[in-house]
Amino acid sequence: MSEKEDARKVFSKNSDAYVTSSTHATGEDLSLMINWLNPDSTQHVLDIATGGGHTAKKLAPYVKQITATDITETMLINTAAHLTDLNNISYQVADAENLPFESNTFDIVTCRIAAHHFPNPGLFIAEVYRILKPDGEFLFIDNIAPENSTHDTFVNSLEKMRDYSHVRSRSISEWKELLVKQNLKTRMETTRKKTLPYQEWVRRTLDKEDKIKEVDQFISSAAADIHDYFQIEFEGNKITSFAIDEWMVLAEKK
Figure 1: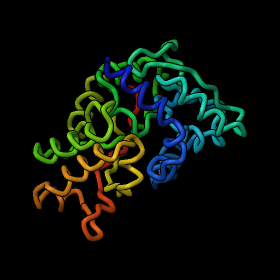
Figure 2: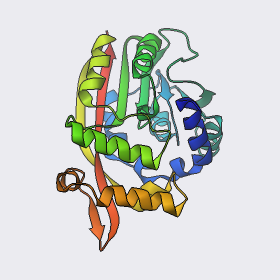
Figure 3: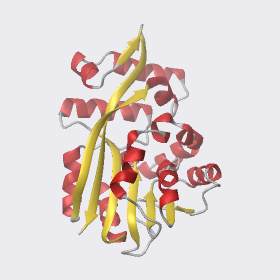
Figure 4: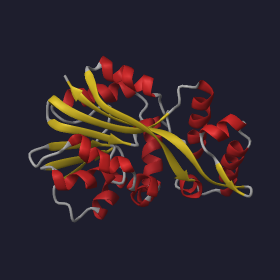
């Protein structure tokens, strides 16, 4: 099974969990994107890998039209059913690495907490550049890997154990290299530690107790510096939360 077929399978099974996920439905980045983009009622937006539709929902009151895409049709159908009160969002099945849109079409392109599922990030960024209008803006948010290789290996191994459709959380330096290559100029950026409620996080994609116990053990047995960096919290022997790195960047097509 290909990585993209893995993503379709996982997100089809768990489509409602991504609508209700506290990690996806909330976050200071949702409000910050309005301040950074300063969107207006003339603009057309493409939201890539919309998932539960949280970015589209946040931007919809400010812009003319949003096209929300996802590779998983079941996810789109479920998200559309939750956003029926917003009549300026349309939905289209689309691969982030091969988008079915004309070049120079969109004023804004967004992609939030999704690109760690993309197997070919260079193709994705090239498509973003292609479909943006000149001087168009790209707002990108994703979980990122630390530059420290040990911490990188830990977080990507952890994510893969919890969700086999995970491809890779990449580092900021990796993403910046791709942006520069496509002549997307960084205007603003910020990083934050994002605390994840462990039980909600692990059960969003896993429903077999033996698999959950494997993830528990992987985290519990990690070295002290891993526990410190990822801010792993326990109540007794039970993991209650941990924190990962998230990067938010606004880039402009030049």
